[in-house]
Length: 480
Image (tube, rainbow, N blue to C red; front, side, top):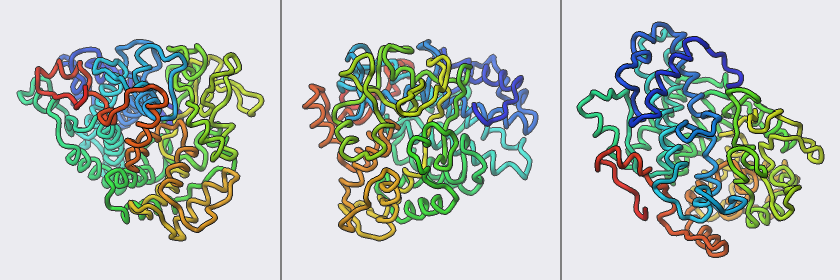
């Protein structure tokens, strides 16, 4: 991972310990024969630092074609963008087409991959938290805050995608008599959100803004604001959290292209770093090209999103999608493009496109500005508050567009602006759900594209593999 010093020898050991279980029957604990993660491994604060780095490696995912590997972030676009009205497969074939058609099966390997990958990340975070006694007094709060930020981030993704889920906040040994119950009992979403809130508050208290590719105070503030907005509650606190981030030195990049091709720039609050042509590379951006990578073209743009970008995108549009030079009827995502495009002034980012080094942006300043508007709107259909107008205008002016001309921002205008500003960054589905527009928008979109959308499609199925392992303890979501 970029800009993070690795303690190579011991980190390799802990990676073995943390991933021994990922190819077996249990994703929450290593096999009993491995004790590297326990007291024999954690002997110093340097060991905790290795474990912290390993949490981000878990989010980064493995750049491989093996279905048994945890790909984590590298498959997230399938279960977010491709379940919205933004993207689709090129050929409407295979397991990937289940997402665009709203015909997802509980046996879908990508759904299972993401689920077990992020419980793997949670295990890594819990491992750090279980050994805080090793940390010095000077660093304990930071180490705890970073681990809790990562755990909150993982749970926030899981609870939004799968609904009620098992809640694991400690290391569970396979030999624990309560292991199966704890590992496979779904708890109410409200309980999961309580842990997320508690973890993020601890992260805010314990962290500073020293990192962009690791947890930070601003990243925890922005994520907590998004959680409050997701729950449609605590709008004032969400507004204050956004304003705290807005006062922390971040700013919009003057050139929209630089957000994605000048990494760790002033707009980035939290990103997962990748390095080209090595083990820390990513393959997902190559999959968005024509017959490159693990697939033959996925995450291709829909006509619907192109219309939105053409009408509302301003100068963002050329850096959001482009025509496929080999198949002119197809249009590819430009953000995170792993190959040179001289017309757009985008340099080559990797000699092997399947080993790209483009960082993945999770939180950036434009998102916070638009959340600031949303928080001030506070669930209403519009706002004319000047602070909201100012934040909205900053984003539009960077896109070469005029600010709002009637001194009133409607919910639809804000949703549209989020769509074109954050297109293909895995926000669209969550935005539609949060704005209570998913049923209307996705039903209409599905009717046009001959999909099979129904309200139950707003949640993914619990992977059938996990249900089988639970011996009846783990229930399935409705509709699957």
